[in-house]
Length: 286
Image 1: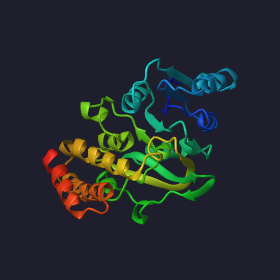
Image 2 (image 1 turned 120 degrees about the vertical axis):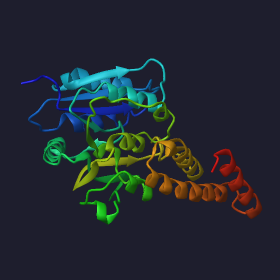
Image 3 (image 1 turned 90 degrees about the horizontal axis):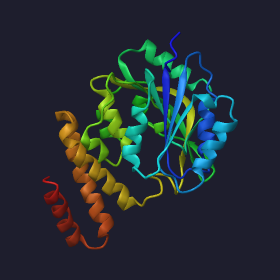
Image 4 (image 1 turned 135 degrees about the horizontal axis):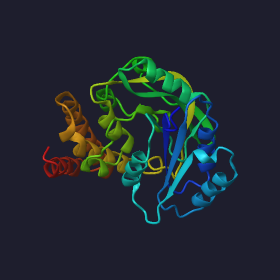
């Protein structure tokens, strides 16, 4: 039997001392009949995240599954994400950021069995609960896609309804990242574009993880204007690397996002809103 892992779990971490033990525990609780490894890439946290990770590595009986990288200098989210993914040796890669956690000990087994049975699927994900201020609710997914195969374009048309900690995907023969990948604000959505190619994406309609929304989260703690600006940046960077149908969707998304940004910047000044929309379209050659 090969000692290589069947599944590598990619966990990027930054200042998540409150949550990291629960995230790691959810991985180590997995009941599997194949080898796994947990890759943790700590991007130079300034809190006690490193101490918490070191503590669980010392104490947990399954800590030999963990490969821990603690960067001495801050790489930034996207370089750290790419670095962590490139350390993964498994046939499949699962994602779980350091502030989310898995709730089903059979999660990995279910998803690996699913991908082994459905060769046309490159990315498999499942339903998740959202935890916000101690209240839980199920993360919404457009109804057709709860149990139906789809392609990357649907994530552009609707929204990114895949929670990161729910994802398991087939590792490509060569996992390489183009230069544009390091510039985008959304690593998961950009990764799905690289991975999906012409293959399908599909959901297992079971809740098996928790997505935590909190003020220190990478995206949940930023204001509405910054969110819209990040989407506009994402659409602008990724546009040249999309197919024609995807580009058509993104053109419409860019224009509506530009309008929303102008409304947020100049809520009571319609003339300035119009001028700012023209400015945004000019600087982005749109």
